[in-house]
Image 1: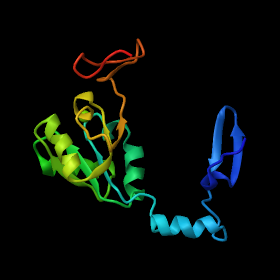
Image 2 (image 1 turned 45 degrees about the vertical axis):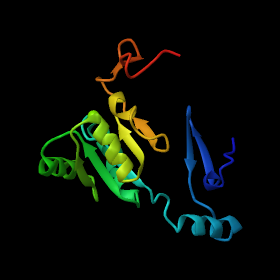
Image 3 (image 1 turned 120 degrees about the horizontal axis):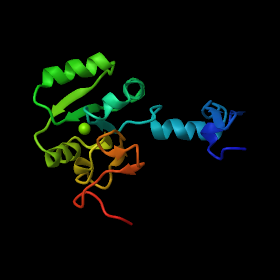
Length: 165
Ligand SMILES: [Mg+2]
């Protein structure tokens, strides 16, 4: 099976039902390489990245650690907590780097901060927050026991945050 993405065409290998792709990037002698370098200035993402703390980064610390090590734009932890120093210590303890901590007092304020800091990719676990985030922000919702029933395999939401299709 071939992947049409030129960034993912180096080698592929099947391991059972898992499809591994070795990403080698665009070869330097490919004309697309210069264009890619010009467009990205050698950086994959320069937009601001943001994430919630509780129920989000603590659900997948290794993933967020890796993400903050490779992200080249500003990174913010926007959290509904009261002690910035404690949050910064907890963020550091998880292993995240280059993260600015921003405290908010309400769900709406969190969305407002996302807008003002020009955050374009945001991770959170609560619909009450995500519903306020501007449409041009890429949103990733983290699943946890507070928003998902693993027994019935259904998302938990209220009439205020969700509707049936
Ligand atoms: Mg949360």
